[in-house]
Image (cartoon, rainbow, N blue to C red; front, side, top):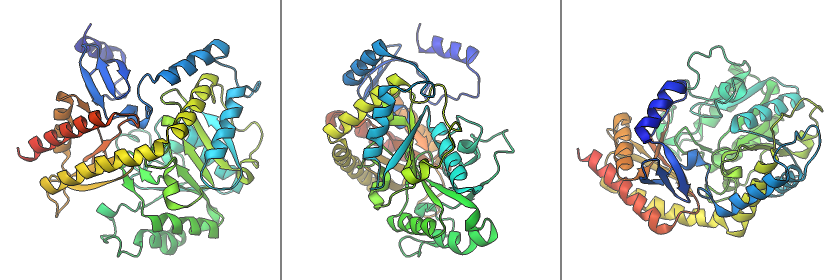
Length: 436
């Protein structure tokens, strides 16, 4: 059976609510390359949305999974303890940002990590409200806080109103499309001033806020990078009012930005950090890592889950940490990011279709516009570029408030020759769409 046959079966048996972006059916993967059931190959710049950072079918990870499968592949951690969970908790506490002692909770997905981080913040502080950001994404795998704290309506929240109460939104420092019509860096951080001088007086007083939930780099929002001064001043605001700073590193963690954690670019320690995606290179796992003085105040039995911290996922995650530290993949991310950024900047100079180039490390993106002055989103053009790239053998993802951002998610293990070929394909596709 070929791709069309399987896609017909998918349409018949898989519910419509599970969308499909690329109309292909994959059979296998090898590092940065995917092969469909027809035998065609594609350079994978999606990584399953920032997950397979060590490449597809990584041999060391496969061997680790097999070894653990032979020993123990499930036991609920709330019934008995097992070694991989405890060892991974220790390792995450050691490599987490900041100098304070940490404690860890393991779950299955990014959505669950966000859910539990918010539960921790509310339980520990005794406060009700969570402040999140417009244009953010914190998960759709649950009905609760992950979805409620996501700062975009379509397609994630359609038909699910009303959502969980107690979540309020403020503007993200999206400098290319500032909602306050300011220009960075001469804006004086008007978006933060709004929080300090307006929001807490008109919406929710600080003594009612349990935590502020923020992505250092908005993922689904279009790889929007928070300015350094903003994050530092936000941390000062939180400390002043005894509000917990919750750092969502589900997509931007694990060396993708050129450091192990994106928040390390800001020299700020979060009170709670959530991470998932690349933690086990594709096996279901997520982690909530928090300051010990916060985490130890949680009530016994109010957190957990049957599958949270699965032994096989934990064993693979330990190997992921080992490889990332051993092979200095943060440094490699910087090098690859410089190569990507140079090419994207060159494209920006050539094609007016590109309105903005941004990102950190290999987490780079281009925002496409019809006109650089008006910044009108080039939505159809974005789809056309991605479609042409797929025809040429490159898989890309779109993102952004208006879905006019092309985000690049190559594995950290991609060969530089293959990276160059992928960027050539991207430029060819942009040129064809830009020149009509």
